[in-house]
Length: 393
Image (tube, rainbow, N blue to C red; front, side, top):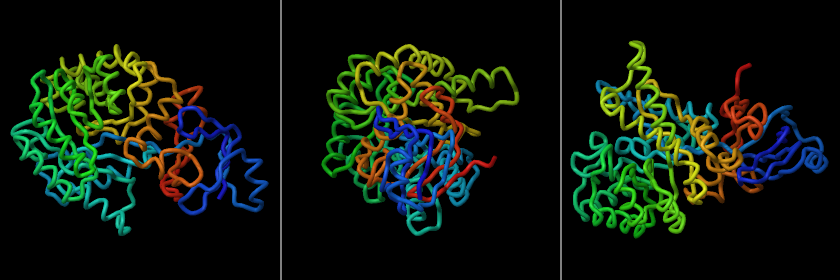
């Protein structure tokens, strides 16, 4: 099948093909170029046309908690799983074809992956850490795995790998400047993960936990809310990737304000109690993101919106913050596609529109390079060459 569009943004951060087209054979892209040249080489091929459409790779959400879709205490495990699967499936409608879950209930994501492999569920690609690892009573302990001391941390990592974790997630801070793990424990976590050939993400939003995470050598730093320019340069030099999750903190701040002013808006009471934290976090991203981007640290999209009634995988909102705060649109698209795939060490398979790669694609109406809001207007989404979402006009 030939997909004909007004333009192709390949995801590499620079290439745009006007009057473009791609040729799909099954799940794979086998041709890319202008429509004229591809049609000449493939006469009689079925054509699907999007006159004002922009073709891009499917987006990658690098920070999701699928299990928190069921953020209600009186549900049993079966109902939680149904709600989590429903949440993941809806991500297709946001142009998201790959999710990295960085902390849900034990075995939930592994079970969902098996269900997609045997055809029971049709969901985006799920890369996961299984349950996150924290110290006793630390951030996320309610659904995570508590482990204290270097050897307990190592044992928890081994257990997660046994259950099928692709990555590991460590929780090192919460909403204060007191680190939750010691440097010895963080060093052990990174050493163990890399020893068994697993990459490792760390929740580190405040100081000094950010610097401790950099010193330990984690592969991705989640949030990094109070990251400094010097630390961003250290991350660049070490090949570490930043997952800022601006949308989570900014939307939470905005929702708290709405909830305080309207009885019809709900928000977790713990969020309201920490309103100053979310307000300051949103301001910090606004003031500092542009400088951190200019420092050269690799940045990817992650959303982490976990309150009840949340929007599913709002990658577009995160990208808009990137652009508003100083990143060019074409680089924001790269952050949501190829940079994520490289971080997952799967760029040979997806994340870019290129011959030989899987046809994880989306077509939006309009030109995002001229108006970023066009990324919201999704016409169709393909996953492995199969149409999994099409707008109803």
